[in-house]
Amino acid sequence: MSVDTAASLLPVVPLLAGLLGLLLPPGDGRGPRRRIAAGLGVAGAALALLVALRLLAYPGEPFQVGVELVRFGDLPVTFGAAISRPVVYVAIAVSLVALMVQIYSITYLHDDPRYAPYAAQVSLFTGAMLLVVTANDLIVMLIGWEVMGACSYLLIGHDRRLPEAPAAAVKAFLVTRVGDVGFLLGIAVLITGAHTANLGEVLATDYDPATLTAALLLLLGGVAGKSAQFPLHTWLPDAMAGPTPISALIHAATMVAAGVYVVFRTYPLFKQSPAALAVLAVLASITILLGALSAMAQDDLKRVLAWSTVSQIGYMTGALAVGSPAAALFHLLTHAAFKALLFLAAGAVIHAVGTNLLSRMGGLRTHMPVTFWSFVIGLGALAGLPPLSGFWSKENVLTAAAHATDGGEPVPVWAAWLVWLAALLAVGITAWYSTRLLLRAFFGPSRAYGPDGPDWAVGFDDAGYRTPAVPHDPPALMRWPILLLTIPAALLGLAAFAPGFRHALELDDPHLGVAIALPMLLLATGAGTAWWLWWAAPGVDPVLALGRARPLFASGFHLDHVQGVLIVRPVKALARLATAADERVVDAAVEGTGTATREVGGMFAEAHRTTLPGAAVLVLFGALILGIVAWLGAA
Image 1 (spheres, rainbow, N blue to C red):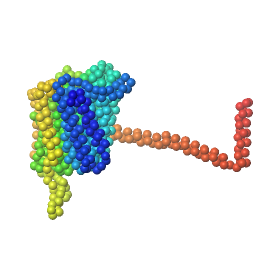
Image 2 (cartoon, helix red, strand yellow; image 1 turned 135 degrees about the horizontal axis):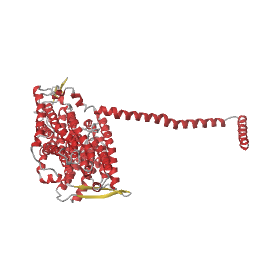
Image 3 (cartoon, rainbow, N blue to C red; image 1 turned 45 degrees about the vertical axis):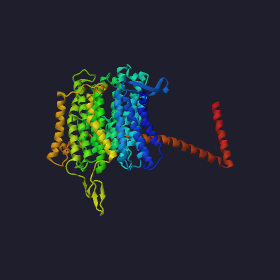
Image 4 (cartoon, rainbow, N blue to C red; image 1 turned 135 degrees about the vertical axis):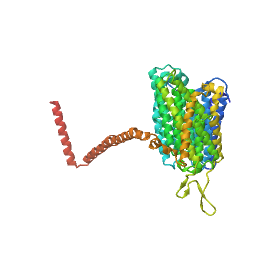
């Protein structure tokens, strides 16, 4: 296969698999239909991964391929791809995570009657993200961006048995749409100024500084929505109502990574706007700490991981703000590995114990050793424990922020200080909640007891007595994706030592010096504090040490409530006012006109039915009136 063909096929393969899956005849999700749906889903992701690996084997320079789809006046829209090493690295991460999710879902959703459309929607989701990754046309990129939004809505709300799932899907759709309005306008400004939608030509255009800053700030609205950055982050924790494999896909390789990647692709423009970088730095700093502090107080296993994603994406946008897109992309790749691992391992725990709540877990280490060690690797990488992958990518982010505080970067020095201090403080917080999660889920006695005994999945013995089923590691189709993801979660950071990888991403040479001493001290302090609280009061949740701050952190600083008061309620009130005006004014006027016309017509109809003498009198009276009018007019 030629590299030109491979570049064109990369997003097409999973998109085609998704469309074919949607065309399957309706059924109950079992039997041949289920097998065909699973085959299409796995094959689409596997072929996309093979195509991406084919592009990785290409040793040449970056290149573009494309074909014109349509022309709007003088503006052509081109379906094509701009291929470079960073693009290929992200495409491999997306395809690999999607493949693991498709395989894992076969068993995880084994009794789901709607599995077939689910698998097809995952394929569409994957293809849309690959379209964003490879597109060399802003309009085509926007199409992939919006298809992802639609797929996220469908997949988050997939389990219609859960009352919170539809609400979470609607919330995710609406919040991200708010940002997407700005994203669309920003793209329109860039295209208008460049007179082309080709990304390469847009990046080479000399924009007016004020126009460029306005366009980039509008783009950041879409980035904040898709990547769950403050203040448009509130949809992501609620999106945990979706199936756990979808959480892995959204958090690791699609959706939240898309915003970071778009800023990476358009970074030559951001370098020309210190104001846009300063805004990005402020939002990143708030997001890093907001996500980390909120993760400390969650009892829901998946919500801990969701808030950690908010924080880790903040690291990526912070790296972009301080002038290091390479560090941002490196952390995006390592985060894709360890966060996909953590969510799939979390799904194994939930599958085994039947609850998301850490307060109902405990003692799982001996029953689920594979899952336990997967969590150790994933949480260690999340916390930045050397030599796991997250350590190396976080070290690059922290080093880039520290260098930016010396000046010499487009971002203001004060903004660089904000990013560095927030990222540094979050190292200790992340280590604290990662240690707490591991201890609460896997150590100590089991807390999975309700009024009728153990709440683990129960069965009945030969005598008919209720007996608890002991939790165990997941079946093979769930276990192997978890095991395979432990490899990049543990070792991907070592790619920083590979000259080809460093050169492609333009990473600084990896080094361990004084600059890393403070983060390691904070990591040890955070993890050690959580462990000490656990040891001092065995079985007691370390989160109790937060005291009165616990409800504040658990609620995400009540930002959902604030947005409800300041935005949702006024918008609903305005909608009710508009509805009332439409019904009582517009509709009333239209209906009143019809009613009045009908009544006048009825009067004339009644007049036509009068007796002959009466009709004659009316005719004569009318003639008299007309005569008087004519006489007055003549006078």
